[in-house]
Length: 326
Image 1 (cartoon, rainbow, N blue to C red):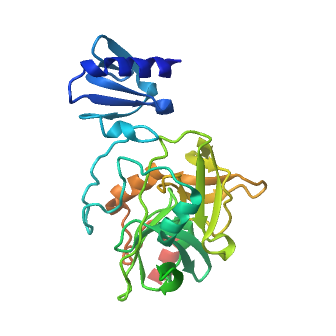
Image 2: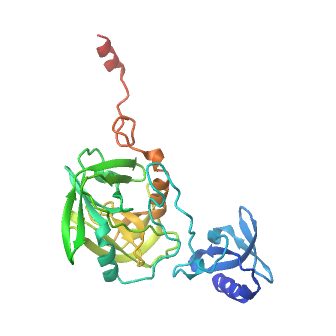
């Protein structure tokens, strides 16, 4: 009821607002357009033309300042179209996160378009999945997929003349690791590597429980497997961390692969399932992935640093010290 009232108020006041106004994105896809008068810890005050609305802070998803005409056309509501910051060792736009979602399409249409960006990550002890962030060969996977490994390769399925050309790249460098978020940033550095197809990052915050999602990965080594389901919940707490829960089938080998919305945007990174049941898969929200990427310098990996998140040295013991002195 609150949502309906707010939307009706916004429509009625449109003719009274200045050309440049602020858009307050609310939960359940509602939005209010007007002049933001005050931002308090517990509420916002918005002038919508003929009255002032007081909006509880708990109902606010994001605030878009400026012209709302382009932001309000997204099928899932407005999103913040902030520019991606330029970080060290990368060009502007390290990953794509458009402010306006592409149109909703079928899984069949999306798989043929974005499937090439999803890859298989192989190590001597196992395999997982991943996806390219940009055409320079930077890719995301799970930390546990490459944990303790020094030999990493990726298999990419390039589309060529309507056929899939399987190509293995063996010069893969670890760029950054976050063990506690279970995320790893890698880069393909083969000399003959082409420009890679990549996928954009969306937003899990604007999704609603029950929306359709799908995953692409290599469960049990069965590459390019597509599974479809719904978003079961956005706030499943496991070990003090919040995950997306989905009915899309997730199995060993899917780890590190993307979970997509029906606009073809990554909204999570699949990383685990409940083995005792079916349809109980989990993914790391894409907001955590963006945080990791935006602060990747803090998680940078170095082969010369024994204190890297990838490996820690055992503290010296008194026994070892006495033996060294002898």
